[in-house]
Structure formats: structure tokens, C-alpha cells
Image 1 (cartoon, helix red, strand yellow):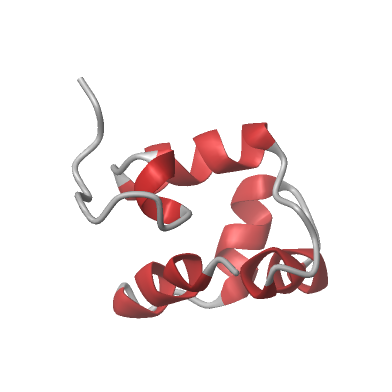
Image 2 (cartoon, rainbow, N blue to C red):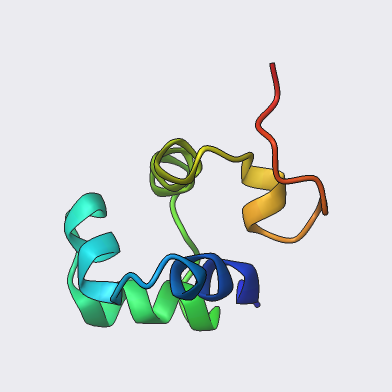
Amino acid sequence: MYRRLRDIREDRDLPQRVLAELLHVSQATYSRYESGELDIPSGALIALARFYGTSIDYLVGLSDYPDPYR
């Protein structure tokens, strides 16, 4: 479901553990976010968008434009 989350993480050579720590969740929980098995809380999406310097729409595949909104 959230393939772009995995792709952007892998493009930056980051293990799931790093993002899990950022979000204060287990690596297993973060893995479930990436696979779409578990819905990502809005606070986590905001944190990921800030971390990557992009928009939430880009992270979840609603936009192909990676730059954040002004």
C-alpha cells in the first residue's frame, strides 16, 4: 500500500530500525506501516514528511511531486 515509504527509505540506505526509532515504534510496527498491514497515524506521517523533506501526499502516493508544500 505504501510502497513509496519503502522506496524512499531504501533510496537513502536507511534500515527500518532508524525510522521506527524516529517514530517511537518497534521495527515490526514500522514494517507493518510499509506493507499496509497497519494504518499509519497522522502524527507519524507528519514526522516522516518532515524527516524526508517532502509532502505526505508524496509519501502515500497521491502525488508524484516530492517537494513539500509551502
